[in-house]
Structures are given as C-alpha cells and as structure tokens.
Length: 131
Image 1: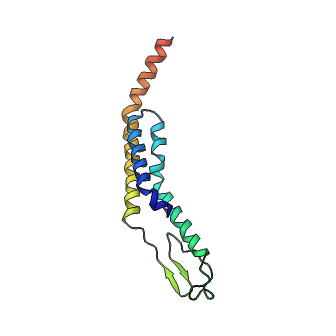
Image 2: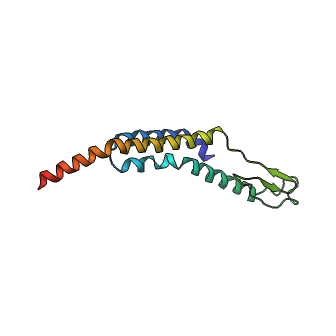
Image 3: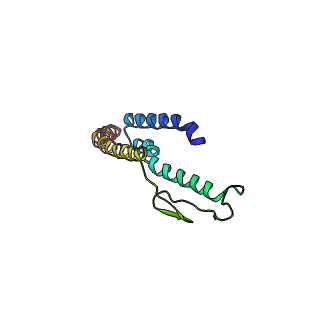
C-alpha cells in the first residue's frame, strides 16, 4: 500500500517540519507544525477510506458473496454486518500521535510566549529608527 511505502519518509518529514518550527520566530511556526497536528485526523480519515473501499468492492467469487451486501465498517463505533459485528479499537499508535499533537500545541504556546516579546521589541526598534 502507498501509506506503508512512504510512512518512514512522512514521519521524518513531519519531524523536520517540527524542528524547523522551533527556529522560526513568527506565525509560520504554527503553520509548519500543522501537518503533524493533523496526523491523527488524517490517520482516521485514511483508515475510513480503505474500509469503505474494501467494504464496497467485494469479491463476487468469494464465499457468501451473494448473501452479503456491500458495507462500510465504521472506524470509531460498533458496526453490524449481517450476523457479524465490528468493534474498532484505537490502539497505541493512534494515542501516541494524539499525545504528540498535544505536546506540539504546548510547545507552540511556549514558543509564542518566549519569542513574542522579542519580535515586538524588534518591531518597535525598527519602527522608531524609520521615523
């Protein structure tokens, strides 16, 4: 699958964007971290896409193919398909990405808190010298 082939490069790219955000002292820092912040949402959306893709494109030669209608198992809640039920669980990888997103938000808060006075002082200094 495409996701598996680019996952390592994607994670490295996200880490480099977060690292770059630490050295940017303006509003672009938040924009650089946006892909990493949205990773948990993207993960759930991608998983739902593949569940829908496989659930709606059933093999006509499979056993019981004539008795089971196409279906889409839900990502977050219990679903029922004929006499079967699906019970999805979000495991450690998802929760680690949520935790990392939370840490990024905390980092952005402290980043802004540390550099906002410096940027304002610099703007004030440049503003006075131009008058």
